[in-house]
Amino acid sequence: MQTKHDFLILLSALLLCPVFICAQYSDKDLYNAYLRRDMDHWKQYLDENAWQTLSLSEKKRYLNYEYGYIAPAIDTKKPWAEDYLKAFERHVEEMYKAKHISEAHYNMYMSSVCAYDFMLNRGHLLSSGVKSFKHVKKATELAPEDPFVLTLMANVEFYAPSAFGGDKEHALQLFQKARRLFETTTTYEYLWNYASMRLCIAQCYEKTGEVEKAISTCQEILESIPDFSYIRDEYLPRLQQTARK
Image 1 (cartoon, rainbow, N blue to C red):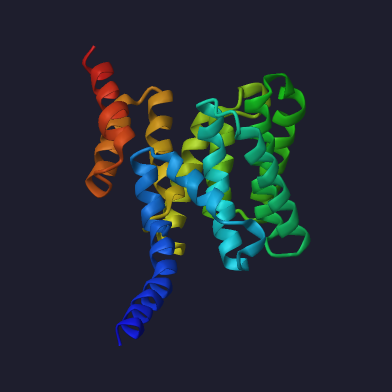
Image 2 (cartoon, rainbow, N blue to C red):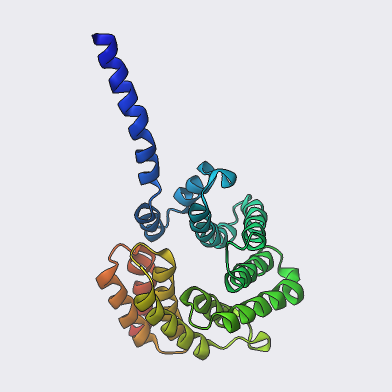
């Protein structure tokens, strides 16, 4: 009887184990990791899920986390960032060729591939920089009401020099439109893209000289996302210090 009892316990553990593994990398869990700037947790999620074993819906989800992981990996000079970028590009191409993502999202992702390449290789401004803008412009033409596309277009306009189409005022308008669309057309709870976009609105206000609006935007964000550690611990205090000068 004891052997049978032990077997049942083992079987229960094996059956429950995948549930615990999935829960560890739920959207809520990865979202909270983003808020506390624990991008190593995102890396673990990407590393522990073999692309070819994923279902179609899981691949689409995986792409979004690859897309979000690479920029901070480059920014913090992770030596493996370029390898992740190459894998991301392969995955985007595969999904597009199989018609599993739209042409708009293909161009959106390829725009980010080119932007990431420029971040890694500053000498590629005239190639990767220009290609990034062309891809995101095409994505916006194809899906002018897609909040993910609009957020990327706004980012490109925010960071690009004016000679390459950069326009911070227009970027702010696009971010604000993207926010409205996220809130009316998507399930944005635990969506890192939505939280990131709200931070970008505050940064646009700051860069266009409206520091008080940037402060009030940050305070509004913290009312609904109190654990957004970068805003709470660094960005808002810095804005408030600037406003006092």
